[in-house]
Image (cartoon, rainbow, N blue to C red):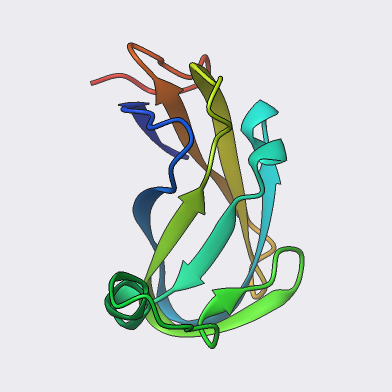
Length: 125
């Protein structure tokens, strides 16, 4: 389990967070949990090209991860989470459940959005 606590929320805008998945080639399945799952989150594999295209305001769809489907990854892969909370939002919890095909193991990557938001199951350092 991994979590990023107290990520500053920008309501009414697209928020972006990054995390890494895997060590070697395998397939992974991603699902969303938490009250922020209603904010239509998106996952992008290897977001570097996506972010360059997004900042240039051009379409880039080849790297979007289909939620609930198995996604092949060749090794350690950066994944970006894009989420756009409504303008009235002050906080929320979004957990990305990541399931590894070869082992059946799963882990949660938790994001607490808002000022001083610490997800209840997160580890604190």
